[in-house]
Image (tube, rainbow, N blue to C red; front, side):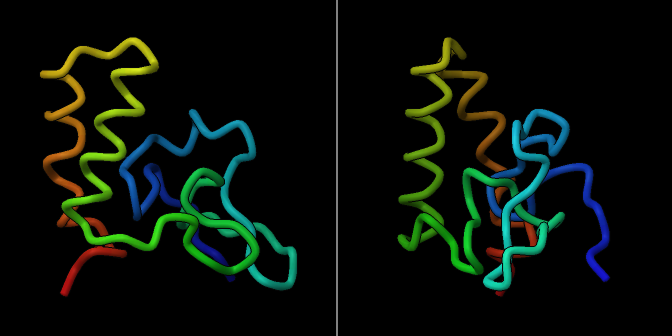
Length: 86
């Protein structure tokens, strides 16, 4: 069974902000660990490195109206999320 997380374990976005309420697994079931922006049909939508993904997310946050500082603050802890842990 999928356990709901408070934040996406790939990008760190609060799951309550995800319009789809989670990504989807390969069988079409809901995945409550990753948001719909990061995970669909059982695969991660962004396949680059953590550093590249942080830059991508910072850019998207700034396009959405967040400042450069806020974007940096929200992405700097991504390495501690489940997807990126070594």
